[in-house]
Length: 126
Image (cartoon, rainbow, N blue to C red; front, side, top):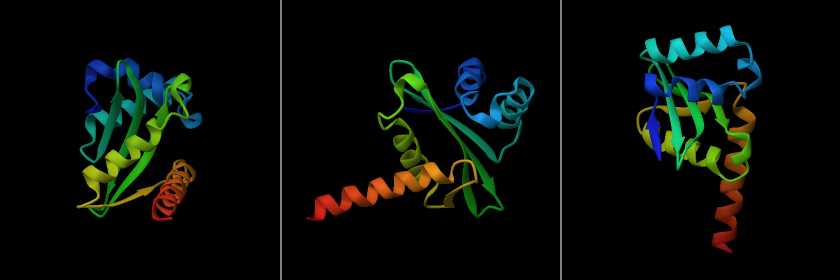
């Protein structure tokens, strides 16, 4: 289930975002969370099953792009499709109004999602 970040999820969100290399520093991580809490153009979502397993952050840029800038999944739940589900959900929520794209840090993951989607469609068409 996709849920919007709230302050009571702060520790969980910080824990998930800390798995991203550029968010290892505690001060940087605190600034990032503060930005999600205060900037109306920054949106953080969590993926919850029994527990919160992933986080994805989107930055609205120039009222044109929805830039995926953070994607993180609990290491013990990686390679189970959670990251891909979060990307699909962001595309569903923002795709009608914005061009959903990646920043330098998330581009490789979004490319991988797109390739897997293409392969899946090719298999279904054959």
